[in-house]
Length: 205
Image 1 (cartoon, rainbow, N blue to C red):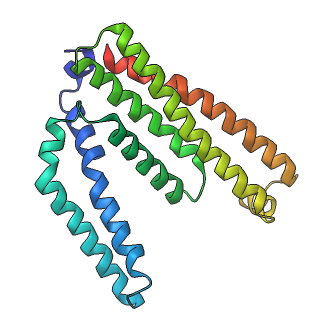
Image 2 (cartoon, rainbow, N blue to C red):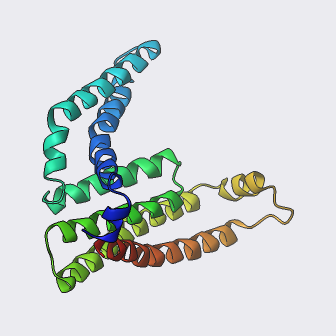
């Protein structure tokens, strides 16, 4: 048992429960919400969303225990889909600001470190997996940053919105904002790789 499991015996279970258990309630809630907009009156949409949430909770009641038992043996494709799901959710929730997507790399690294430990992988095998996980997290973040840059470049009011939000005495030009956003995004993408891999190594020890 590694140092983390000794110090926080329940944290691992809570982490897996939150990550795996959150998918279907959130997904069904959003499906109920957005899927009912075109077919239900406005005052009824909230009931459709609530129904979706309850359906997601029911799925968890029926299947979550099985998923938790197999948490470290799940197909990596499904795990990538779950990661993309949360990444898209965060991106939308924060209205296209990808800074918070950066945090997902920590969770991916944490999971992968524990997965390699649980499966008894050697240090060399674990390092190879950590490298791939870091690359994957960085690529997803790069796509999010690129999309944000494209949206900002397409919106003529970007500069006015940012200058007004920050109440800058010397307003930034649109081009200056895009250059700063590009540089900041590049730094985040590079950091994502090292943060993800570092977290995986810590969880593996």
